[in-house]
Amino acid sequence: MATRTRAQNGNARRKVMAWLKAQQLPCHICGLPIDYTIEDPHDPRHFECDELMPVSLGGSTTDKGNVGAAHRFCNEWRGNRMSWSPAAARDALAAAVRAWARRRVPATPPGMVHSRRW
Image (cartoon, rainbow, N blue to C red):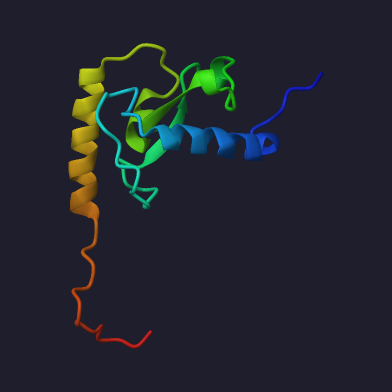
């Protein structure tokens, strides 16, 4: 029997992500709350579905027992490590959020018009 790839698991993966998001759990890596309303996927605090047993080590992307809620940054920071320090994850997330906030271009204030016509 052939194993299914991520591309073949699209619908099952979306269902697992919706199930996980509905639980509104804190990040399983750093332990801090996740703001599930953040829409910007580049925001380090954005919600992601993380595999507890990484796929690279044989974990499943669609098994509800193998997923946990995580911040985007924490998920990337952890990689495929099986052990980590939550305190180190919190420190790294705080630094990433500060750096991300400095890089963001401020939005145009209400009522202000650009000098160019797009």
